[in-house]
Each structure stands twice: as structure tokens, then as C-alpha cells.
Length: 214
Image 1 (cartoon, helix red, strand yellow):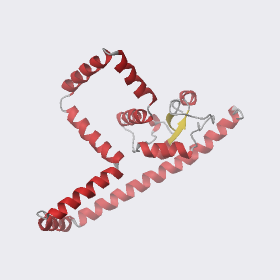
Image 2 (spheres, helix red, strand yellow):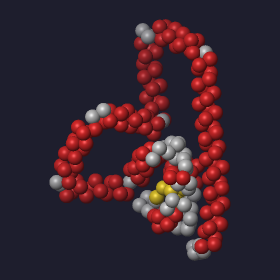
Image 3 (tube, one colour):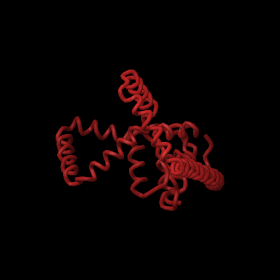
Image 4 (tube, helix red, strand yellow):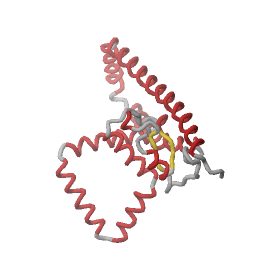
């Protein structure tokens, strides 16, 4: 593979930056228009929506076939939207933990000490966290939420993004693996970048660190 020169890397960086700015703008406008349209429609016909839902519920609440079919539909939807379901569950869990942080902090510390007391379990835990792309994804999502970043993406969307770039570093072109893959926000979160997939690129650790907050 040819070695990238500083000039070629700079030109490539500029082109990709313009593309990502356009994609981020499209994501934002699409999300805002859909939410605003749905909210306006609901406010305009709120009573009709509520009356229609109540009438349907009263008609079907004692229908056993409907209940069974509804449970099957719910299971199918959860299986097809596992990432979304997990994210909602994580939100509920965070609210629950926020209600008594000291209790849960002490509970987590006790669990950590039990695991650390066993060298085998501790080594397995470290290996799981260091080389698991899904664990890295959730860790990055947590940091993005902590910084107040706009946007959201699932692990499946991130993996599709990596496949789109051919499992190669965007900046130097080196081939990536699950162990060397890192997630880079092309427009840094500190400079107003979003956490949508349009602002994400795969990068090797060296290029990601070198780029920093630029």
C-alpha cells in the first residue's frame, strides 16, 4: 500500500470534512422536520387521537386472541429493533441508578472487588472490555451523552459505517481490525459535532490521537 504524504492527507481530510458537514446538516434537518410535523399534528388533533385510542382499547381489552397476537407482534418488533429497545432500557436504568447513586456505587464497588479477587475472572473481564467493539461503542456513547452531544446512533449503524469505509482508516488507509478500530467524530464534539453516523469515521489509534480536537 502506498504511503500517504502530508499533502495528500491534508487534501483528503478537507474533502471528507466537507462531505461530513453536508451529511450532518441533512441529518439535523430531517430529524427536526419529522419531530415538528408529528408534534403539530398531535396538538391539532389531540382529542381525536385520545378518543380513537380509548375506543379501540375498550373494544379489544377482553379479546384473548388480540392479546396473544399483540404479544407476538411486540416480541417480533423487539427482536427487529434490539438496539433501540436496549437504549430505552439503558435510559430507564440510568434514571433508576440516579435515584440513589451512593447505593449503586457501593454495590458496583463490591462486585468489582469480588471479580478482582479472582485473577481468571479479572483477566477475562479486561479482555472482554478491551477487544469487544460493542463495549467500545457503549463507552463512546456514554462519553458523548456526558458532553451533551446532539444525535444518536446504534452499534449496527456504526458497523455499517465501518463497512462503508472498507474497514480502513480514513486518514492513512491502514487496514483495521476489531482490536485496532477506533471511532472518530470527524467534527469534534467539543466544536459542536453531532453523534449521528454522518459525523463518524473509522480511524486507527495513531491517526485518531494525532487529529485530536481538530
